Length: 113
Image (tube, rainbow, N blue to C red; front, side, top):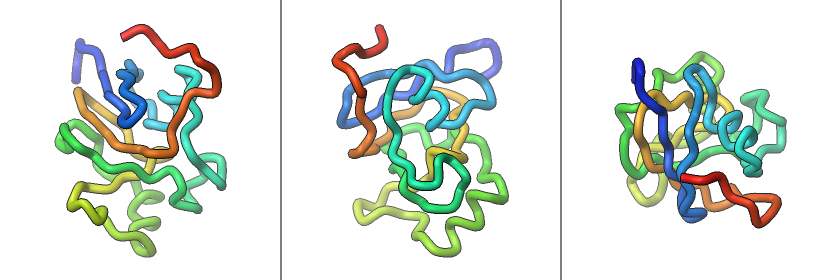
């Protein structure tokens, strides 16, 4: 989203994060003090960081090769029918709402909306 803020709401946490250009969901969440689930620490090997896109699927960059490789082992669509992406790879480019049930804040402090 050239010249605009990249704002992503993470559910069920109910928090809206402002992401930087070329930043992945995991990087954005971590920068805001949120734990984003991972086993491989963002190396695109475990798929623990997966999330569903509830709104704004068009506001994510195309899948990089590492994410495409993960999709060989994991379905592209969740049980709910929503599009699945991986937090270590997916780069938001505009407004979106995502569902990552295991994303949470490590403290009670949440970023101001």
